[in-house]
Image (cartoon, rainbow, N blue to C red; front, top):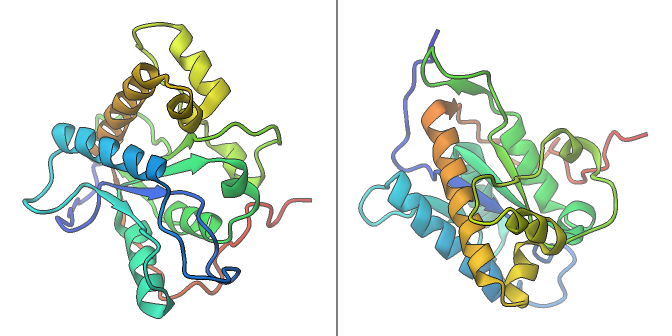
Length: 221
């Protein structure tokens, strides 16, 4: 049976989770996202907007810009992760092994229930989309190993996927492989559209961070 869907027009279609300096460890003012993260977010947002649309004056994506801090900032991030429909995670070594907030954002989203929008929808799949940002050689830790890394299909050249899995999106940008990068970002936007059209993720905004995961290695033997 299809879920009783009540879409929140103010909720983001996707939330971009990426590694940034943890505020508790910062010795200076928090840094804004690097220009490559901003470029990726802007281009993905534009693509998703073309595919899904959004209310006037509102972007379909959410990105924590690293401004300010304290309780207000914390509530804004938790609200974004607790109301978005797709969690896009930029996997890197800092994301997986050094950040406290990335596991927390993942945990907030993973606790929410994914429901089909229609009875004919295919079996439930994850609305968490891990994307390779930079290559790493360690095994995926904990819960991250349970979700497949995004691998685009239907690209103009079969070699595109191999280059993405070797260099990551950041590496593609740094080495001037923009044609491959842009094709993969478009395919990612189409994947977000597909998830958004088939499934609905129930909102679930925690009151605070108590009890939330702060390491992907928590619970590992």
